[in-house]
Image 1 (cartoon, rainbow, N blue to C red):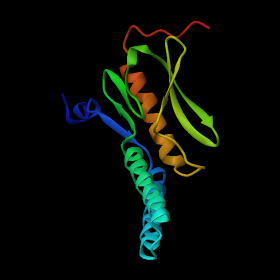
Image 2 (cartoon, rainbow, N blue to C red):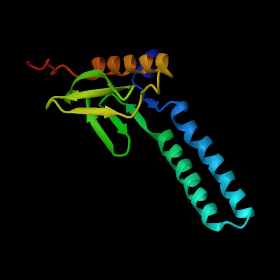
Image 3 (cartoon, rainbow, N blue to C red):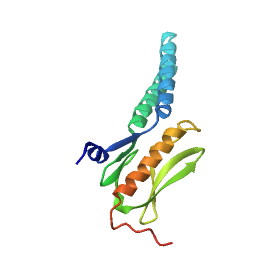
Image 4 (tube, rainbow, N blue to C red):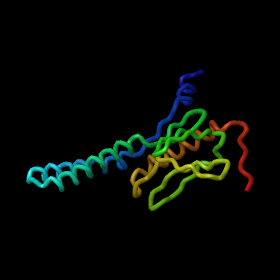
Length: 155
C-alpha cells in the first residue's frame, strides 16, 4: 500500500462553515454585553433576559460547529441534532437540494427516503466553492465505497 492509498482510506470530516457558527457567537457576545449593561444600572430582569439569550446563542454556535458528516469506508456518519450511521451500501444517490435559499446535500436511501446532511451547506450564497468541493468529495466517496452489490434503483 502506498502513502496515497492509505490517505484515501482515512476518515474525511466535513463540518459546518465558519459563517454558520460565527454569527451566533457574535450576537451572543453582544447580548452578554447588554446583560452586563442592564445589570450595572440595576435592572436585573433585563440583565437576566439578555444573559439567557447570549448564553443560548453561544451554546447554539458550539453545537453548530460540531455538526457535519464523517465519511468512512463503511458509512457516512451524520453528526446533526440526531446522530446517524448510513452504510454506503444503502445509499442510492447523493443529490443537491435547495431549501429557503440554502443549498444542501441529501443521501437517497434504497427505500427512497432522503437523509439530509447538516454539512456541507451554503448560507445565502456564501461558501459556494467550498460547498461544491465538499459535495463532489461526498459523491466520489460514495462511488468509491458503495460496494459491488450496488445497482441503480428501478424507476
